[in-house]
Image (cartoon, rainbow, N blue to C red; front, side):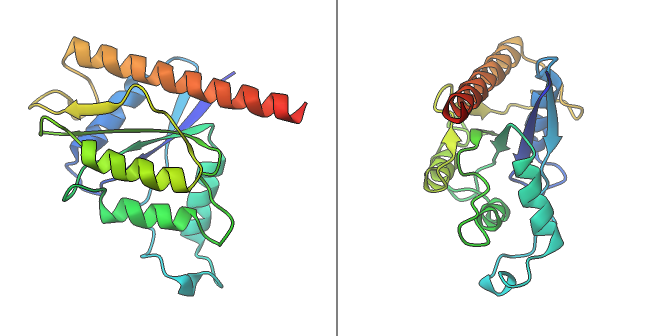
Length: 190
């Protein structure tokens, strides 16, 4: 049985090191895991004016979240928080009112930057938002990856064995969380 994990890259930069990290996660995924990108770049700025006429791109975004077993959010840190484009996507995920896409969904948070504390502040803000959404967010291991030149290649190879090992363990832990959530749901529905 193949597990499908969606991933959201919280940057729309063409040179994003977080996109390279996302490619590395895809490359390191276990054989029975398929990764699919849930894109956010085409979402318009959210406004309640859209609630009466929900755009197709937002409907597709919400459906993409519904179609996967769990979501990994790979975020950079902008001014000690998450990028505005990611916050905008998260706002769309809660609309229309009462239809929260992340409600009960297993979610993992990870990010990379050149800083020694990586994306710690952004991830804490993101976890607070996901808590409000009642997402089931993986607590450990935390993924604060300090990016050094050449750590991730353009095609998503990891050049450091210890980082690659950490990322494999991170994905195993997330798969474990998804399994526990699915098992609990099966028990509740039995």
